[in-house]
Length: 110
Image 1: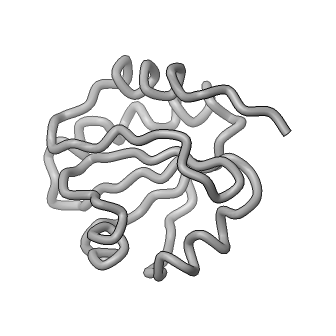
Image 2 (image 1 turned 45 degrees about the vertical axis):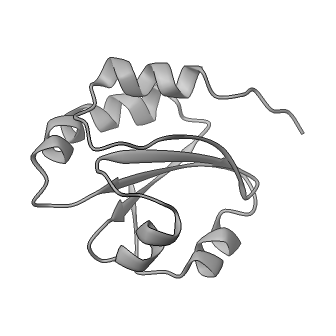
């Protein structure tokens, strides 16, 4: 998973303007983030049509606030710069829950 450096919202939207992206907001100190991290390589492999970007919530605190990320771990899916869906809350997330979220995203074609 590629780690997203500190970026502004405009810089993020420029980076994700083409293609399918899954933003994974987390922080090193977060126990619920550490819970889901071991499953992330499997999730990434299963949904290889998405480019997964790890976003350190603390490093990107302004971006997280602008995107209404008030709980971690959280996920936001984008296609061609447009938000497809979000799985954002303060609860611990399981691999099954993350897969369900991705499977329920709207199917878009170009």
